[in-house]
Image 1 (tube, helix red, strand yellow):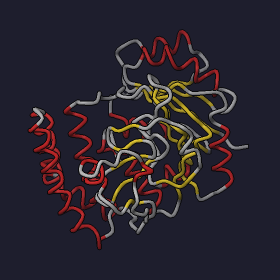
Image 2 (spheres, rainbow, N blue to C red):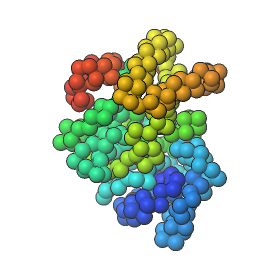
Image 3 (cartoon, rainbow, N blue to C red):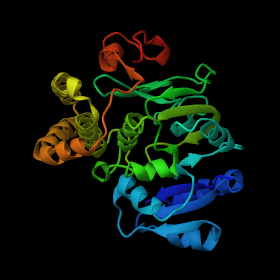
Length: 338
């Protein structure tokens, strides 16, 4: 019988642990071994776990090294066939684990999978971080079935089919443990945001599939790491997105895509500035400065990355489709996924 380890990475999330960990235990303890990997919290998280959740296994990381490194360090210490990486701000539901494990067991080429993600505060709506499966367009902009930029759809069962996607959310990520370690886990330098997209791209380049299984559903608070509107979040999103393109794009596409993205990011920065978001404008500049200053490091990562033409990339420009042509739903998109 396969062994599944559910791992919650926590940093000063004691309120989320108090609220959601009892539900995780109720609906998961029969299907997975439950761990909390703590990134050196100072809010009493460890004391809470030791006093109230004695059956939960604890790993104490030495520093707050972010999502990527925090999981990389923790998962080296956990032996399992499958890992479930779960945010502390997620409310799980009854029988949420078996459908995904069953799907992955049915096809050995499935490397990673996610459930359907709905909003915790508006439970009929899809949630930003993953919705019903993630994609990118040919310029690297991410979107989901159920969410394009800030436009969220109501879940009316329109995306209830299990399909192959481009990326699965890091908020609730099922992954084969052997594959996770074979690919050396997440990129430590990402810290947080888009590390799962980079990871899923590498899964696909390695010849495996990424899936969504909407028969499993969870509810996500969101914004638990960095709130929407945070300049730090803007910086990480623009920086990490550009880095993952350099790392993973085939050589035949690299120049044209990066040149176009430079212009698009310039316009995004000017849009922030025009809306009074000076700190976000500076964040875009800082993101590109990071790439230029660390280009040799990124090029070394590119050389070490298996690259190939992968599927499920939208062949349009999702930013233009959304902001110029008003396409707010996944079902509005007409161009094919390659």
